Image (cartoon, rainbow, N blue to C red; front, side, top):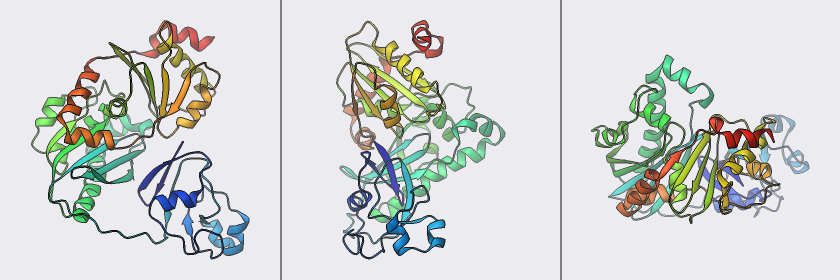
Length: 358
């Protein structure tokens, strides 16, 4: 599974998916129908290797500048690029009353607008660098806070203008606590107070009348993992594969969560860490279904290929965060699930350390 972001629009694609089908799903139109006859389906994506079709229609300078044709390409990795193809135009429903769903992850920020249901989601880059975040924030806290608030606020305002709204009734926010602290402008070594943040008048500087923060567990186990879990059955091991890897084991009575911070998927120890973590969560317990989501889910599946578990992909979306904005029942379920979750420090755990060296 790969994340493909085109002009801020995001879709999750299977490995090997034709790029022209993905662009079609996102509303782009191909002048010749994507048959490779016109050379007009140009995108800017230096990460894609040029093909003979590119050489037929594009100059060496254009290819050097990262311009490619979309019609003969497939997706083999996560991609972010721009596209100048025309988009299908559909009338936009005006929303006099609306809410917002916001999810902040290590690399992306998703902002969605909804009336009775999610109408549109826009994805922008998270400009904060997780590897140096604590140091950067200590040096210049206001710059980090303003950057995060501005990325959310600017996207929200653009959606308001498009849908004829002035402000959101509710902003539902899913993020790791480290990002919540930065949004609030508080010190990273302080405990984050959810109730105080939700009752604050400025709502983190976000354009809404009220705020609901999806509950998390510590700096690196945030509300976004609980949002992904609310539709899953018991005895599931959900693994969110981002720069921060989050494990959430859902059991009949108690849940257990853990995380690897600033994880390097290319490191030679990465497969051993994944396998050791899975063994910790499954040892002496009925075998769960392992569900993988996030940008690096395909790499994680390769790490687990030799383990005797059923694995499946779960497509991340804003739908559960949107449900939390609109439904008190969903909020109650999220709060109960979070309250029933304990946190394990894997590197301090004997079972994990034993499996890591096996």
